[in-house]
Length: 616
Image: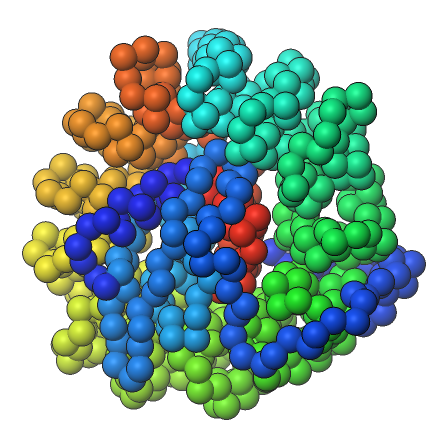
């Protein structure tokens, strides 16, 4: 919800136009074993080229309590870089994206889908914190009181006239209510709004109880509950399969995956593609070796739809199986652009020389700018010695859009690899030289982020200056995000001051999010002030969700007050309720943010995209 609102706000403003387990299980990679692959029937072959776009005028259903607006079209590049419609605030969640076309080579969409890897909230949910605080009975009582209050607020919220408040209430009580929430979630499956019904399906997964698992199994099999009328939604069965994967993280047993496999094996009716795609998302949430063989078969089958093949390829991400790497190595050089992109992303974390060699060959042969950029950032996740020199060379050559990708690749690689001090010094020097020569504001924003990723003290002054004097709100926002990436006390203190001084409301919220993920108690007054400062309800709503990411007792108190404020805008109350759910949740939060880092965001069906808007 947070990113969906911020995206819509930014588009209105002027500005820039886990991988599969190795081996084991009952399925051998490259074969389908007992999980027999039932391929699609004869169909028109998919033409070579890029993504098949969705209906351009449709936003589709919005699971999880948000309704996406039209996604960005992305920069229209020929040779030189053209800035995107907006570079987006630095929220801790991935932003909505439309189907990206061949001309969309912008690094900024990749960053928005992947930045949670580097901006993950430092504070654990308060409900987890108390487990490590032996003897802190006062905090335990406070949390139990807050959880009880949220349940009461949620039970009232599911009956509210406002759809957004009902969605948030359903998600939050599902997360914290355990068995007590089940009846409310069953009732929400009959809500007049399809969006609320979708939220209820996902909330059942987050609930993690045996009762919730039984309900989702029935929804996945039948599309409805016995004696409860018609189908819950046209997307109920694939959403239930995804929710079963979410539930595996929250306490569901292996039967949840077995049911999903059985349904996809049959591929009944016109839902076959959606069910199989949902199974691979289920696998991304809860990896299971039984799914790997099916994923290999689907990835290789050119009769499958592009979106289904891409989800299958992503399910193979990080595998160390030689046969799987061999398949990915072939696909990364295949004719279809969307398949090459997914294969490049999947090969990044695959161990071994063959995967590395496949990416090097793809980089040498690839001409399409976005696909080439994705190959670069996948190589950035490699640990082979000297790979940073490849990115440094790319930073000096190439057009501005590729220089931006190379800068991010250097930053990501240096952040994740254990570089020798001498190599790290050379990486920082390369980025400083590029900054001194760069004139393109769009590429300079990527260099700001790279400076933060490598924590280069010599570039900090330039980054801070960009946060205060950047020509566009987008440039200032990314510079504030870079200050968060530096992460030291001085940078975070300066970031807090910048958040208070930033004149653009959307950039201010982006900076606030980058500040909130550090969970510093001294930043709570700044974030609470944002909740009170903004007059517009939608901006106050985003401030409420930022507090949920902050995860402190001060944030808890502010959110509880906002959630029961009858005079507040409904959007603010809804965001406060969802923020409380994030802060008090027992299962691991931001699971879909983790999945988004594996996804080829250029091929997301309409029913999938809204999943990445939630804080589940």
